[in-house]
Structures are given as C-alpha cells and as structure tokens.
Amino acid sequence: MALITQLDVQKETGTKENKKWLFPFILVTSLFFFWGFVHNLDPILIPHLRKAFNLTDLESSLIDSSVFIAYFVMALPAGYIMRKYGYKSGIMIGLILFGIGSILFVPAANSLQYIYFLGALFVIACGLTFLETAANPYVTILGPAETATKRLNFSQSFNGLAAFIAPAYIGPMILSGKNLTQTQMDAMAPAELHAYVLEEAASVKMPYLVLGLIILAVAVLFYFTNMPDVKDEDKEGADGASFVGALKSMRLRWGILAQFFYVGAQVCVASFFIKMATTSAGLEEGVAAKYLGFFGLAFMLGRFAGTFFMQYIQPRKLLIIYAIINICLSILAIVGTGMIVVYTLIAIAFFMSIMFPTIFSMGIDGLGHNTKIGSSLIVMS
Image (tube, rainbow, N blue to C red; front, side, top):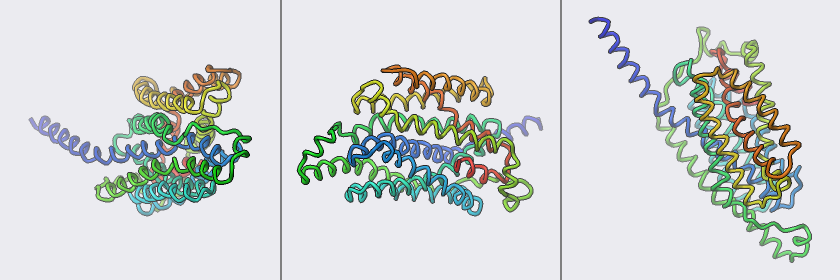
C-alpha cells in the first residue's frame, strides 16, 4: 500500500514537472522556427540584391559574411551575459536585436545603399547569436538528460519547417522575376534605372517589417512567461566555469571543429542553391526558388526522420552514416550536370539535417557548469 502511494506521488510529481516545462519548451522551440525563417531568406536575398545593386558573386556573398561575422563577434559576449544573468535574459536580448534588425530593412531599402542591408543583417545576426547560444543548450536541459539529443533534434525540426516556408512562400514576394542584362541597364535613363532599383529594393520591406513586429511581440511574451530556473551548474557553482575547464573536454574540442566545417558547408550549399540551379540546370530564378523550398522541405523531413531513427540508432553512429552519404552526394553534385545537380543538392539537405543539433548536443554533453561557455564556443565556430 505504501509502495502504491509512493508511486502515485511520483507520478503526480512527474506530471506537474512536465507541465512546468511544457509551455517554456514550446516557446523556446518557436525560436528555432524564427531564426530558421530569417536564415533561409538569405539565399533569396543573395540573388535578389545581386540583381538590384548589380553585384558580383563575391560582393553578394558579403550577405553571409555579415551574418557569420556577427556570430563570431557576439558568441562569447552572449555566453558571458547568460552565465551572469541566465538563459531568459539572453533570449530577451536576442529577440530585441532580431526584431530591430528586421525593421531596419525598411530604411535600408529606402536608402538604396547595399551597406545598410549588410548592417541590418549584422544586427539580426547579433540577435540570432544570443538566441542560438541560449536556446540550444536550454532545450537539452529542459528534461531528462538521456533524451537531450532527440529533444534538440525535435526542436531543430522546426528550423527545417522554416527552411521550407521561407523560400517557398516568402521568396516569390521578394523575387520580382525581372532579370535585366548589363546592356539593358546601361541603356536605361537615370530616372528609369533609379525606379527599377527602388522597386527591387522595396520588395523586402514588408516581409522583414512584419517579421520584426512578430519577433518583438514574442519578446513581450517571453518577458511575461515564468521560465524554469534550470540549474546546470555542479557543486563548484557558476563561478567555477572557465574556458580552460570547458576546453578540457575532448567532446567539446571535436564539437567546435566539426561544427565549424559543417556550418560552412551548409551555408554555402543553401546560399548558392539558386545560383547552381540557374547555371547548372538552366532554371528560371522563380522556379529555382521553388526548388529551394523543396531543399528546405527535405531538410525538415530529415530532422523528423533523424529524431525517429535515433530511437534505434545511437546519434553518433547516425551522424557518421549521414556524413558518409553526404560526401558521396557532394561528389555527384560537383561532377553532375542538369537537374541531377538540383536533386542531389536537395538530397544533401536531407542528410545535413541532423548534423547541427547532434554535433551541438554531443559537444556540450557532460560540461556541467561550463555548458554556457561550451555553447558559446560551438556557436562562435
């Protein structure tokens, strides 16, 4: 009888604990969707701004540079702020920067200056750095340790959902479909050319303004939500955290290195997908954007599939399998021509899907009070 009573108490306690985590978990998971959404608009911005401002491929790639320089610069400050003030503070700062940066697209479009777009993207990315540095480890410790990797892959699946929605539904709002040659632009009267550039630049205003307002509304929601006070420190407490201590972990060192190479590969494949589709397969810009939506869909399905497979295959082994498959697919994309290249890139997205969250959760595993430092270093890489 006493045993039954004890089990009932444990069951009731577990139910209350689950309810305590549920809404904060939903809120934090929504962040994965939002930063995935804005990241997957970058491959749309690259060809769009290249056309609007007559940029070279190198100049258009500064869009990615402005984003990831922010990650490099802000990752350690983000980690420091969260060690001092907690995960919720880091998320709040991230959302505010994210929202403000999105709204800055409006004056950037009005100015017709490419540098202002890069500045707005830099502010957005500063916010995303805070969000990723906070949300990734927060999800891993919002529940049982043994399911941390599966939980993070589930949350990251909504990042994949955004990778499908952003190019498929927002991409056509930004891409005008007008492709003027240099000769045609040179033949335009100054007023006509100015009107063309203004029209091309203005198409980004509404999507980013709406996104910015939504993000600021989410920040208000976080402010009024009671986020669980997760204790990820060990007996030494937060004061015992140090870079030297964190880097003693072999898993973290390999995680930093692996994430550096993985994100570089992911960003390049996604950012120049439209360029590859238009040059290798001869697709129109709008059609290529639709295929980019399928790229995002494959990425999302890969995340959900990976979360399922992890019930039967260890995350580390699944990561190795997916990596080997992607090496083979990358070779095929290099030597292939026509639509084979497009389909191969979409397949690569499927098998890239689990890599970021799996590398991340494996890298910070066992860090204890050094978790926030480890998180910062992986995001920084």
